[in-house]
Image (cartoon, rainbow, N blue to C red; front, side, top):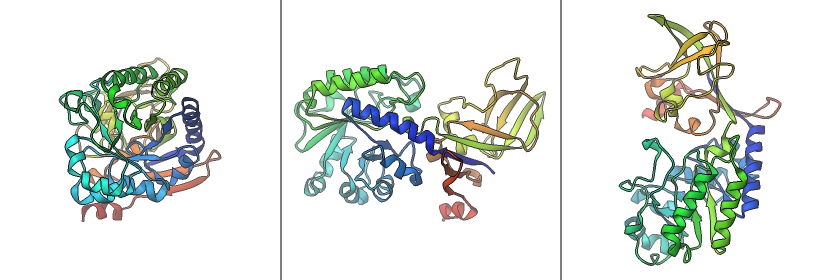
Length: 371
């Protein structure tokens, strides 16, 4: 049976590093639920982090209920019938546009909500357009020409988010860009949220350079609370997705392993980004030590539900296991039940392999989504 497995000890290793960065740089680092929302693990995160950030009312409720903190909230647009509830839940509430900030002013002013505005500094190192939020003609945040000379009445923060699994150098560049474009606002507001994409737990990431860049920002604006909300960094390298070979299809010499998982349903970023996931004990490139090539096929009816050739040490047989590495962040929250494809179980285990929590998905889960 296919299953996601999340490892507590690896989560703690990441979170210890994140907490050390927050302390050394004197900044606030919180969990972004859009990347990881497996709430049975929230008590672990709460030991290291002061909060979490939501992009919807549902995520905000999840944070309040299972993280025990008032959520930071940003959504590209708010639904009118939900807004009062969102504003009442939020510790920090960010608007995507000046028009929405004004549209809901009477509500958030009455509640005394701590509000911010997302701005677009028109800088991003992200090359894949689907994941690049800094398009000057885009929908995410206000560009500099749209802003009044002074912050709107009651505005207490700015929010930027233009990184995706990026480097410390990218963060430093983003900071300089924000200072250059919005420095006059930074002098007058209380907080700056630098968004996510700070992949500080990846091997080779220059943590010291990140701390230096953040310290310099804090020194320049000592009154400013600086917030980071990485998602991938928290769960990087902490989980796997185990799959079983159900069949092997061969056409014109090309062999495809038919698995009990789906790339479009369970690993959509492998098709959208796209990227090549790492398989345990398998080479993603031609290698004399791995002489057996196979494509990997998903179990949905989508024609493109496959990954191109991987290379195995020995012939693969029906019933063999295939283990996808680094499948905790984003993957677990972006899964779907398209085609009625069974959803993998999710397990949280400790360092000894003992199960802390688990979730099995049944036909009833699929039926409940449809009516």
